[in-house]
Length: 438
Image (cartoon, rainbow, N blue to C red):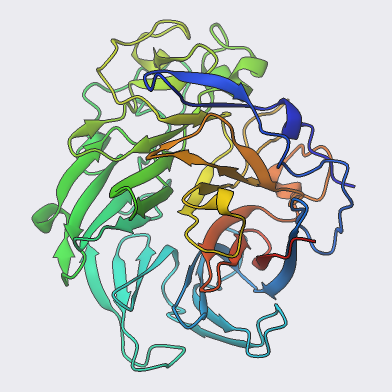
């Protein structure tokens, strides 16, 4: 049986009344996954009482994000990773007999590796590593019969954090995440003792969110885009909330504090920080990378050691945006969604589901994350308690290496009847989750 000792013990750092401080509170264990509940290894996921999962599909390839069309067709992005084969593009899936398993499966755009998927005005938007594409459908066709249009391109090719995730608002603006191509903008990449560059040249065209016209065609980042916000290492999880009229995102925190600066950080400390930060996207906002990071244990933003920090020195309050919530380090938030369906109990309405892909650099400590959490909202801000909604993906009690994980959750989407779909990167599995009350 897989057992997560984190379910009861982990802390969340979130905004509360007065809404000025990020503080610690216990996980709401009343609704969390029971670590002693039966676990079926073949299913690969464990849920709270009252929820049921089915294996919707097992797709060959390195899976990423999901999107659901109004008619219930599910679309699953595949990218290319070293050692993961050449499968890429988009997989379209339908469950024609309503047994919880996809039985009509087709592939398209098999020459484009990508991550982000979202429907907007009945068109499917797809984020590759260097472009955002738009697919249009003729009637009820499952796979588009016409080639895609390039909405925006010209993004720099990069070895790290290349996925172009995005969010589209209600005024046809598309906000594209352009990740930073490094850990902390050091003069020599991940080299002990190498200082950080100031100014950081990577912040000119990367490490930020860029705004474009979602209805446009053949836009170029440098010619047609505007830098909406900066100092964001990699906002893999980014989503528009129509209820609150805001874009929310979670960014991946930096790595290697112990490896690069053992004089300041122990292995244990480096395994838990920096925080994985949740923010509201603000025009003109600076979120602090690479010059700082947020430390939830000290409840303050810390000057990065590459820029003279020692693990305790804080930066001036107000210099950078403060997170509205923060989660344990290195969990890697890869996707999020706001629940708007009616199938789940009412307490889930407008709350956020966040998919954590899991850590890779906590060694010599066990790896953590690899779960989907739910955090309720109080008006337009996250509440102080969150809960583990789905775990058991790794298939083992103690995970030493991410390569040993059977599944790594990465994408999430809501179906037309309020059901959820969750995808796994390493296995290409997609689960469908329904509330049964049993």
